[in-house]
Length: 101
Image 1: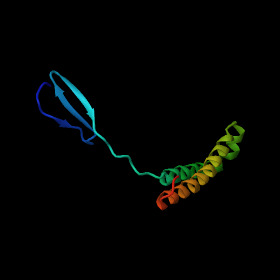
Image 2: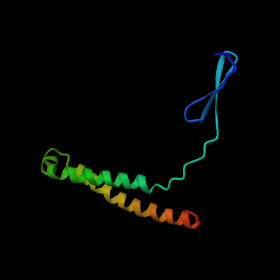
Image 3: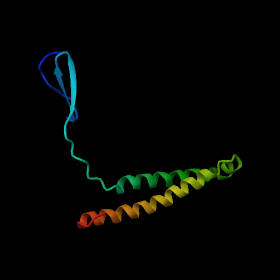
Image 4: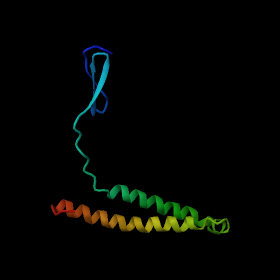
């Protein structure tokens, strides 16, 4: 481990430099991702909606066993997700037009 070579980790974000008999890790600057969140929120909303539809046939059994709130949770997740998509799209439009978010 005490040799003088340098080794880069696959992603290029961490570099390992041997110093004596120890290795020292240093971090390189990584550019932040430009993510507006619309895709992530849309996927989450779709998953909530799919869960709601998948649970609908089992509604009587869920209510009888005390888990009827699962339907409400999935429905609320889907509705709040729709609001989140609307908010994120408006934010993305403001960012693209150069105005502050």
